Length: 237
Image (spheres, rainbow, N blue to C red):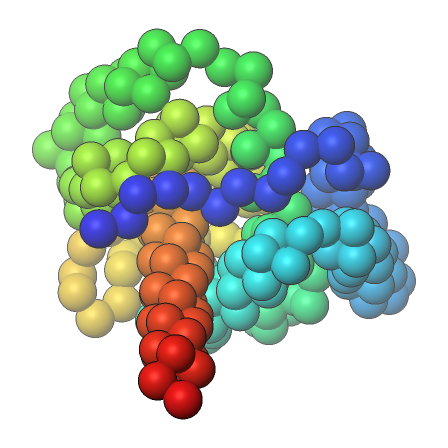
């Protein structure tokens, strides 16, 4: 069972406005300027690496796992499954590190939100998710919403997930509106439908966090077992 959330330590030199500016301006640069995607990729990686060099070892590992899982997820969901397509039919190099930075932003925001947001967000999302599925506009939304509830139940990072659900929806609306990527209405293979963007797209961020935290917990358990074995071996000498 997942009992936590990706949680970078506070006090790092990365104010929230830096991430907001990077995303809002960077997507426009990618869209409209020559070599814009390359420039945005370099800046995004530079900001993430700057942040990582000033983080604890556990935070560095969790964010590296976040980037790794995000990369695998992008390859599967976009290039493999074909749920959505980027403007140049590739995966921009700034996307995986941007996922980690969006998490940093979400964590910063969640620390200032009341606990009431935890279930207010999924309760507010339920009616439109059900209606959109009922009329056939977004049948995949029911699947994503069920996965969101699973994440909320099996994790202590519920407030972060509520924030990420709303934050990612805003990001999706912005990115699709200016044309950086597009979700296909007909979901390949399974025959579901979705919108551009899906209302419950934030569920993917929640699942990403659960993967990172589950992996971190497994690494810590393995480390503890190794240390216990070494300690026992030393005592028997």
